Amino acid sequence: MSDSTETFLDHRELLFSVIYSMLGSVADTEEVLQETWLSWESRPGGPVESPRAYLVRIAANQALARRAAINRRKETYAGQWLPELLVEENSDPAVRTESYSMAMLVVLETLTPLERAVFVLHEVFGYAHTEIAEILDRRPAAIRQLAHRAREHVHARRPRYRADPKVCREVTQRFLDAAVGGDLEALLRILAPDVTLWTDGGGKGPAWSPHPVHGRERIAKLFAAIHGHLPGRLDIRHRRAGGDSAAVLFLDDSPLAVFVLDLTPDGGQVSEIYSITNPDKLPRAG
Figure (cartoon, rainbow, N blue to C red):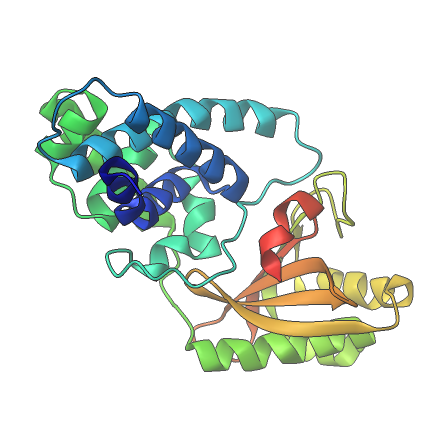
């Protein structure tokens, strides 16, 4: 293995994390990571003073360019669009798992591409504003302004409560048992009055609704009605998805859906339901 290849592999997890934080798509992250590798391999000769800084600069700017393409795809996407969950453990200790929670990824989607880049580089990866200015080739004053605007936006919208993972797993199991079993009374008990359901089928998988659904009664009746159309032998497997407890529904060994729930502050009821059934976003869910 060449020194160049070894250097890239030493930084691969960090680069993947930076790109994924900016894009919220595993497939796009892998493609941008490959582009970063090609740019690294084809760089002009001579030693690189700081390979980490050099690679992060390439990755961040490639991700910014890809972000524009993702935004164009979203404009013609069938139904609701949710970020693709990274249903794996991420071993990079520099990354706070909270940054990968579904709720956080949804909030990040409301930022401009530059605001998102500045926010994740500063808040998640700890880069100073002057360092980010060098990475993104912007003036430090502009970076500070972007960081301030993004931080205020995110802090106003991010969830104030994170449930204990064990509690979240137990509530998720109870919810899915009720949903798969079509138990309307159990659903009414476990759903908060102002619960919201977000579903992403991408026109390829079943979407419970093309728009967000609000309210306990509507969502409970929706899942109770779906019960009769579900395959008979569904297997519920619990996973970690970044900062979330997630559940994956399998038919045999094929994933059908990923569910992530947010809970009320007392941990007793479900306040948000995120459901992904688009098969393009499920390969890593196993």
